[in-house]
Length: 111
Ligand code: HEC
Image (cartoon, rainbow, N blue to C red; front, side, top):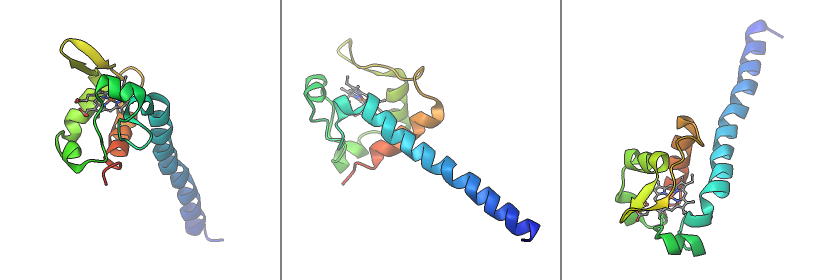
């Protein structure tokens, strides 16, 4: 086998697990830390989600109501309504990359 072919195969093998791992992480992180309120389907129609006032991320209007930057800020700093914490901050739980991946994951609920 030619050295260049070997290198190409090697680097492809190295790249694939990295990209799937981050996509998987967002799904795992979401189901562990976010789905209790925002719902597995992003609807926010869980017991906790209804109590805290989570919105329906399947709705295009809801998705359009906040920018990626605002969403990321909410994940990092948490959300307060009328002085009460309705979502806690996750800046110390996840890296910036994981938070961006979660933001993308949330966008994917849009119908
Ligand atoms: C205890 C319930 C709860 C948990 C757990 C929770 N959230 Fe939230 N989240 C909320 C509520 C309530 C809001 C505010 C909704 C609003 O703006 O009216 C919110 C707002 C947001 C927003 C801003 C957009 C918006 O709807 O205003 C994003 C993005 C978000 N959450 C993502 C996440 C992610 C990602 C996780 C997991 C790391 C998570 N949330 C965990 C309840 C929760």
